[in-house]
Structures are given as structure tokens and as C-alpha cells.
Length: 75
Image (tube, rainbow, N blue to C red):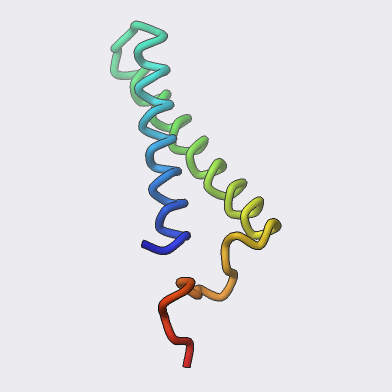
């Protein structure tokens, strides 16, 4: 699994964890509350993905050209 896919899966995990945590913490399961938390969680997960992509790119841990790392020939 390449680094970009791991980062995307991490963002999805963050989104699901945040939404479920906020639903549990609020204790209200009305449709409007669920929709608002889902939208906010999705935006938060996307912003988290963008921030981590920038940080890892700045630290040169995420290759910018789509290289999948060791073990693959680049020809």
C-alpha cells in the first residue's frame, strides 16, 4: 500500500471516528443533528487530509510524483 492511500484511509478513519464521537458525546440522534455532524466531520476529515499531505510533503515523507517507494522500478 502506498503512502497516499494510507493517508486517505487515515482521513476516512478520522472522519468516522469524529462523527461517531460527536454523536456519542451529544447524545441526540435527531436527523438534523446527524446530518450536521456528518457534514462537519466530512469537512474536518478533508481538511485533516490536506493538512497532513502538506506536512508530509514538507517533511519529504510523501513523494510528490506518485512514486510508490522501494521495490518498484521507475522507467
